[in-house]
Image 1: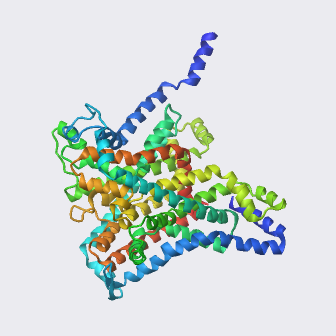
Image 2 (image 1 turned 180 degrees about the horizontal axis):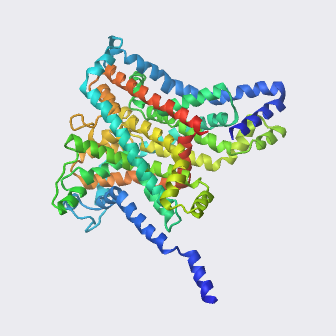
Image 3 (image 1 turned 30 degrees about the horizontal axis):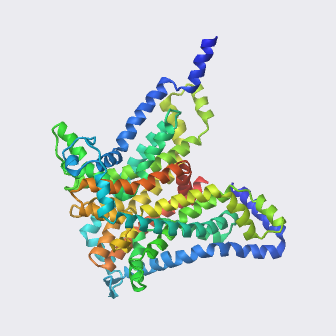
Length: 305
Length: 285
C-alpha cells in the first residue's frame, strides 16, 4: 500500500512541473496549520508549563519558587506514590489480560454464523459506549449496598454480605472488574476484525490434514492475530494507566488510598490538596511511563507494516 | 424429490441445531454481561423502597422517578449543555481533522511524519498534566466555568482519532479523480472540496458520531472546568446526583438510564464502523 502511494505521489508532482510543485509543497502545511495551532495552544504549551510546575513549589493560586528536582525526590519517599505505582501496574496488567481473554472468547463465538449475531454484537458493545458515570452508577447498585444484587444472590447461599467498596482488597478487585467490563468490547471488535481477515482456506487445508479445533486455533488463529494482539495489549495498557474515571467515580481512590492510581493521585494532590508541584511531578512520571509505552507501540506498528 | 428440495430449502434458511444452541449460550452471556445495564433500566421503573426490598422485576412499573427527575432537578439543563458542548466540539473537530487527514492521506515527507508523531503524543499523554496549567491559565482568562473551555479541549483531545479516521477514508478515494478534476481546471482545494469531501459522506458521518460520543461521555475535563450547576454536562450532573441521592437509588437509576439513551442510539448508527473505527484507532499510527 505504502509503496504504491509513494509512486503515485512522485508521478503526481512530476507531471505538474516546477511551478505546480512549489505550490503543492506549501499546501500540506496550510492544511496542517489549524490543527497544529490548536495542539500548540492546548497541549504543547501547557505540557511545557506543567513540566515547569513540577520543578516548583506552590498552589493553584501562585507558585512559591523553584525547587529543582525536590518534588521528584520527595515522591520516592512517599508511601502513597509507591502504592499508586503498584496499583497502576496491577490495574493495567489485570485489565489487559482480563479484557483480552473475554474479548477474544466472545470474538471467537461471534465469528461463527449464528442466528442473532448482529444483535449480540451490538448488545456486547454497550458497556464500551455508555458514559463512564452510567457504568459506575449501575455497578454501584450491584455491589455497593447491603441490598445490592450481588449480596442478594450471596444471601441465597448464606454468604456475606460483602461490602465490596469498604476494604482495600475488595475495592481494588471491584475497580479492576469494572475496568475489564468497560474494556472488553474494544478487544472483542478488534479481535473480530482480525479473525475475519484470516483466509478461510487455511482452516480448510488444516482440516483436510486432520487438524482438530484446538490445533487450528493454536497453530493458525493465534499466530495470525498475534501481531495485532500485541498492538491491542499496548494500547489497552496505555488507556489503563491513563484511566481516571473508573477508580475515581467508583471509590474516589479509597478506601484510604487503596484504589489510587497515578492519575487519581496527581488529581488529588493538585485539586484537593492544592499542591501543584507534587501533583505535576506525579503527572510527569505518568507521562514518562506512557511515552515509553507509546514508543513501544510505534516500533511494534512499524514491524507490523 | 419434492420433500428433499423442501428440506434443503428450509435448511438454507434455518440454522443447524448446533448454531442455534450456540445462539442460546450467547444470549445467556449477553444477559449476564449486560446485567448492570438491564438492572439499571428495571430499577429506574421501581420506587426506591421496592428496589431495596430485593427481587428483580418491577412489581408496579412506574415513571415516577423520571417525572421527579425532570420536574425537580436540572437534568434538562445538563442535557442542553451536553448538546451544546458536544455539538460545538464535533463541528470544530470535523473541520480541522478533515484538513489534516487530507494532508496525511495525500502527502509524504518529514513534516507529515513529524505531525503523525505529534498526533500520537496528543493521543497518549496523560491529560491531567496539561489540565493543571490549563486550569490556572483559563482562570486568568476567565474561561473557567465556561462551556467554551470544555468545547475547545474536546476538539483537541479527539483530534488524533478523527484525523486518522479521515485519513483512512480519504485513502480509499482514488486520487485519479482529483487529477481529472484538476485537468478540468479545478484547483487542488477545489478538487478536495468538490470531489473528496463529497465522496466522504459516510466517513464524515462516522467521525461525527464518534466525536459526539466522545464529547458526550467525557467526565474528567468537564468536572474540572464546569463548576456551576447551570454549566454542567450530563456526566458531571449525574455524578452530583450519585453523591446527593446516595440512598435514592430510583432517581439515580432513572438519571443514569436517561444519560445512557443517546449513546445507545449513537451505537446503533456506528455499530458497523465500530469494528472499523476501533481498528483505525489502533492500527493507524
